[in-house]
Image 1 (tube, rainbow, N blue to C red):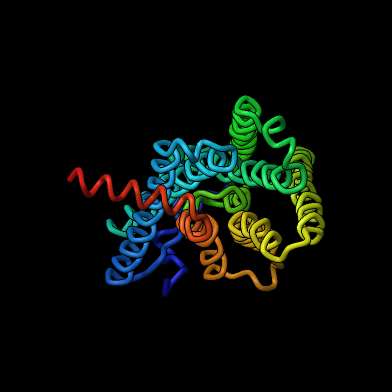
Image 2: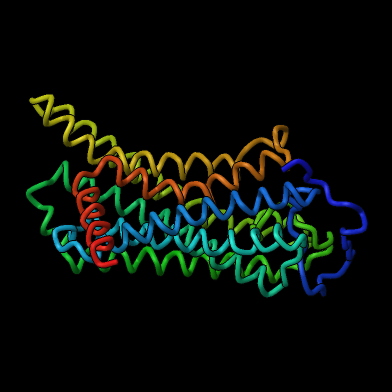
Length: 323
């Protein structure tokens, strides 16, 4: 990551036109050795994410004692993490290995849609998982009624459908705008804010409308999460025994850790002051929420959950006995 400024000859500025066939992504390095290093780093992180999330999906699918709402939503979360990794990392690895920066126009549009789809579905699933923890701790007697198998399936379907509509709306809005500021993106994958910087459209009302809608939706989820955890903390503090308080709160720790990592990096990436913005900082933050976070989530959940750790050990034992 030693160099983030592309040589002038690589910049394909096309003023007053958006009829180009490809975009140029951020150059992560300017030497072959550093490009190879980036390839190896991305490969290691992506393999860790693929292994961790695949193990969690397999353990939950095969372990009948894990067929509960919490693990059902965790399985869905692992699928979104796999989707995020598979959307952004392969192209970055290809570009690093082959010393190129190009991504086709259609490939960029697909990357924008898929990443927006998986990242928004993950946020909605984290919100639902917060509701699961709220019902489990604050309304344990109604847990089976409020979070039955049909209700869980409906909530998961709503999260995926909402993510799809969110991604479709943003992708359609982004790629319907004329781009006259060139085709050079300041990011290692196609991200909506960096594409909008290339726009010369005066459609402020449309941009404002999309921004208000998405911000309102995100705020509703955020307020719901905060309200739920306030109620959870109040209930936990009223538990008479210290052991009971610790047990109740420990079930929330993995979700809190994953949620904090996700929200802090996404909010900082898109709302940080322009005065502290720089290519290297933008790159580091985007790698955190698009690559590192999906790789860490399986580790965070498996470290604190004894049932999941036991299921993973059983799965690994059966695998090694078979082969």
